[in-house]
Length: 292
Image 1 (cartoon, rainbow, N blue to C red):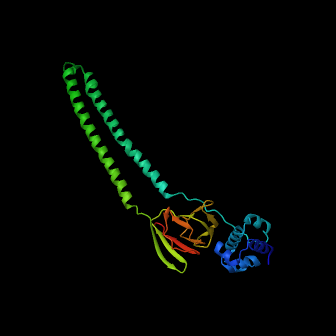
Image 2 (cartoon, rainbow, N blue to C red):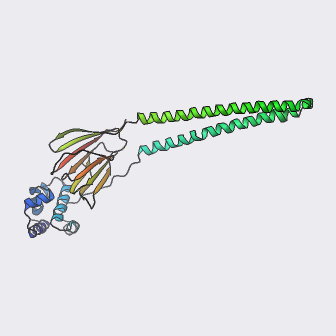
């Protein structure tokens, strides 16, 4: 028996707990509890599970796991848990482009009206001032000015009407294109594929990201992995403490989630999965079908 295993066993016996009672508390099988007490870590499913089981055992008998890991660091297997960098959502980029286009269409009517006003001013200057400089036309100055003003007013009115019509058409076109984009954008779809033993498989389609979030409703041990058995998080979450864990798996094609019991809610891109009722371990496989 290892020193760590002996320490844990003494704490269990001091609390008057049998291995079967400890199993009910921790949801860890008796054979793994025996392996921990005997220091036989080779029978464990992996280093991640070994450390997680030791931590859960220690908490159940009122010992501090971190102090045990430090004191018996030569006995306990070590693991490496790198954090996954966050991805920028393509939704943000597309919204930025849509925002820029919208601003251009907003100022387009103002630009057109300004150009038309400048054109009218030029015509007025040409007919009034340029022709008035000819000595032969001085006698008809008053009549010509009145005629020019009348034509300019009528032209300006028509041009304004045309500019307003063009602006309205452009605005309607923008609205139609935005509505078309919204109609063409499919809604996220999560379907349950099958259940084999304790493993349930789901499929996620029409999603621009793949973010998994676990929210504890009680005390539960969880492990979040990708399809290559790389663990992004493993440990205990509990309601009222570290009650949630969120991992962005947008670069992955699937996620494997191991849950110690049913006291947890699982969300994919903020949409809650419907889990089966189980007080024992559940394995979830979530396949992410990326957009072409």
